[in-house]
Length: 636
Image 1 (cartoon, rainbow, N blue to C red):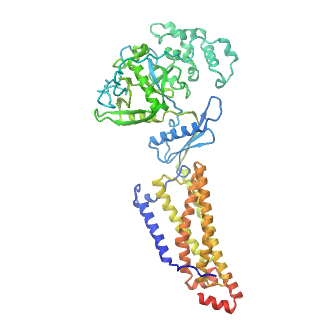
Image 2: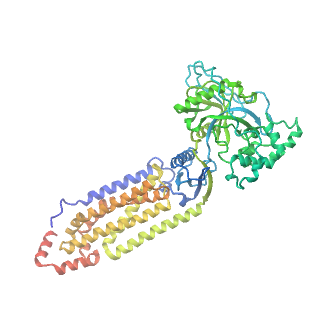
Image 3: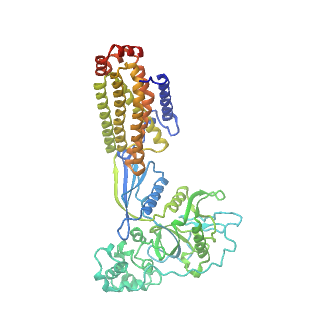
């Protein structure tokens, strides 16, 4: 056999390993993100199943009951992820599950996720009429914020906001040249649904389940419930009913107070707006997506008090490119900066032209702002989140000003940025895992890992004796490397250790054990072939090295593929398996082989009983001839 090339210098490899340990734990204790006491800095980030937290499952609901398009589901996942992250919720995980579910997991303390998965659809609609929750509002201009168009020299100015009890904002920008008038009249849209009575006879043939009924069937069922007299009185109204002036009308419309939000949602927009007993409380409780149709007039409420009849949606959430809460340097007030896409900007300019000029007088007196201009409502699903008065034809970047605080400005900006969910969702499951249960899971996972490591060590000492100490020290060093890497990766990339991750580390023990077996069995083969233990170590390493690298490379590639094609906790398993395998290779090259080279020079290693190489040494001595013995002594 050819002698091994080069002379092994174990001190260098061990020095490199020591340097790696030093750098890693300097990062653990002193790198960015290392806070608290020394023990606190040694804590890795733990997942939901180990520390407790909140888990919510949302199911996409489609009209046909079929699974939604994969692209729409992924877009919804991205928006919900952005909403959760925008709230400052740390370590949140938002993943798709199956072909219609989105799962939100927030480890740590229980988080409020009630509205982050709200199936909202963003619409910009001109406010045509306004009334309070149960009657007509004062015909004087509403006391919302007002603003005058900024000088044309300012590219994106903010208007001055008048003090108001609520942040009823105004939208401003640089007026376009000649943009103060001349807007083309927009066609007057038809309200959602016809105001004429539906045939009463159709109600009897309608299915019992409202979800299986057409709009006409549901409306006919509501007409039958309230009675023909109440229905006729409601559909005949041209303005919000004034019960104080007509008590008899109040009695006629009384049945509408008994309607559920699900029944109210199918009423014509004119009925929802003009009947005072249809309150904002019930309108806000309508099912998600009740007013999502962009080509219909709808009714929505602002702050649960002001009921508004809204025009068709001329601008939608997909037209918004970006929005941000910023502090206006000229007024020292918080405003919301609003940017649109190329096509969206054109739509927004046309809408603001209509609102500024009050084309065809669509906006009645009650719906005008302090400056006598129409408002544009920002509708998120079933509610108005803002209704700024339009103070100019906005041809570029716009600002919404009002009585904003930093929190309210950023909240509105977040809703504008992430409001356009392409799907409607229903909450299927909300689960809070207590810290006690998480601690039990963690204890069970660590116990399983400890038992697995202990079994490997017992087997190693039983079968390999002194060589078992090499296995034991290698596993300890690998564990210390893995732990340090977990802490650093948790701070730098947000890696969270879960039960699946612990399982990945346990599986990696088998990978490490394989490399031990390959190396030591190859060492025995070299000794049986007549080599001395000292000369057999480098030759065994040269032959075993390629097999060890190949086996570990396959494990790493499998972990990478599994990570790329999976989601959630399975990704955590794959990441942990790949990380542990890579670090095992580091220990193999920088510790196991160098320490074996050092052991080969010790008397204990030459002892068959102590080294664990007894059978191989005995077999070699039995088969040895004087010539091979002389060669072995010379090599040693």
